[in-house]
View 1 (cartoon, one colour):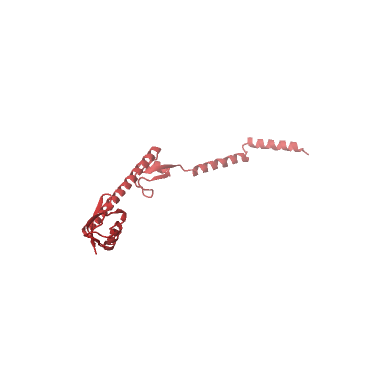
View 2: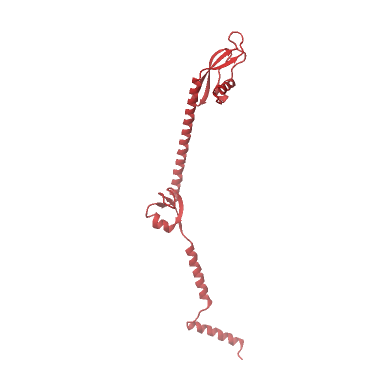
Length: 206
């Protein structure tokens, strides 16, 4: 009966001879092959992309001026040769931001200018109405001669305008001269920094 040491020596020798004979098929190569396969599989899953800006509209992709991420191959094989897009560089991105800011600023200024112009036109039309309606009549209790009791205030004129023209006017833009006697006076309404309406007030005693 052979000893355990002799059996182990015989098994090792048989394994070596088997490999020398070309029939070795242990697990080490198989593990290496599996790892290599996983590495190749992982590489196939990683797709390179490029950040580009469209130079014109591209159907199913985007509009001119849009910043997009596309596959490197799509850019290389189609977008670049046809001149439909270009790679975004730090300098190009800065230029795009600057141009967008200028466009936004111009749009804002243009809009504000249009609104200011529109408000001025409305103020001019309102001033024309005030100046063509004639004098607003104000009744006060009379005293000696032409004197009246009390005076006529900006709030008085605001109330009269609301009653006769159905228009709300802020009394802070109304400037009424000092009125202590009957007669005709001229008040001013500052409707706009460049538009002032002159309104006639006819004060009489009851």
